[in-house]
Length: 124
Image: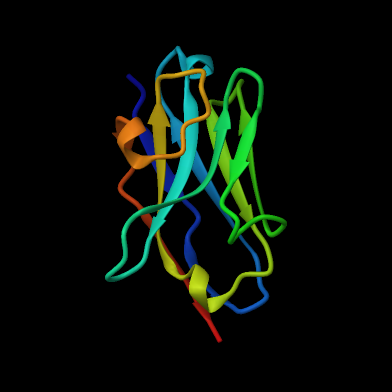
């Protein structure tokens, strides 16, 4: 089972960009679907984007479609989330997660390895 560690959060003004990275340990990275989730205060954790490592299929939440891009590097065992045109409503703790499945999975219960989270704050 992979372990995941996120990095790259921070404070940015509305309209700005941030790039989150997630490093995954383990030798079976290609057997996983990787997801980015976020949780704002008082709200449930929600999917932002997901990608199947072996073939690069992607999923995006409607709220981030066209602004965020998820990508993976199968050699380095990393997954990234490029976030452009950020909005104050994107403010949340962002989590990287891993699910040992080749099926694109979008629900939190489908993931069994989680990072510690990284704060993203977008000021207006």
